[in-house]
Image (cartoon, rainbow, N blue to C red; front, side, top):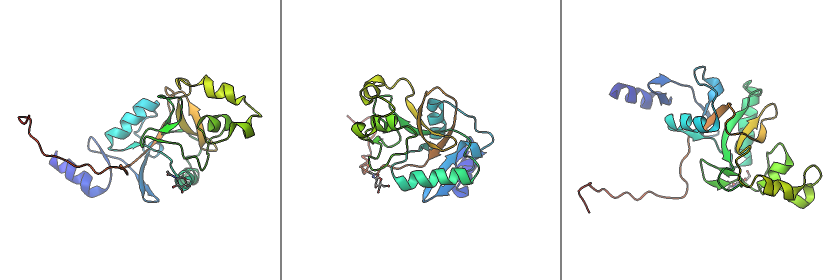
Length: 194
Ligand SMILES: *[C@@H]1O[C@H](CO)[C@@H](O)[C@H](O)[C@H]1NC(C)=O
């Protein structure tokens, strides 16, 4: 056991029950891409999240344009452009799109949704300017529960963002994340303390 842990620390590879897996480093972020790992199954959104957590990672979030672009460019160049990938994005709680891994809403300065109706619902586009294909009012109310097509994939072949049923079985991208907002002040206690 100690040997496995030591091996994991030294090898710069994540460890799943001692199994060797491949991760990549892209613009300073460590990612696990399920497609690169022959033993990693395609999974629904929830199981993909749990799989990432079992590696000490989380489903990937795309908070900046640069990060989103570098991942899609990498996936296409590496020959993974013909698969769908789960991100951490979902609208399960409020009907508003959030990145589950960070708790943040989608970045309003750019929009990678395939369909403008989804971008409008995410608050990234002004409904008045983009009401040609779908009625914005209907779009906004329709999916307020977020239950249907509640989770966000990178959709092949463009790898743009697309809401999908969370139960759909897909590839997925995990990443190493950290908390940007808090320092964890930690108080040593014992269980006998009141
Ligand atoms: C939003 O995206 C822009 C462009 O990539 C980036 O500069 C900015 O830092 C992002 N904002 C957040 C809160 O991540």
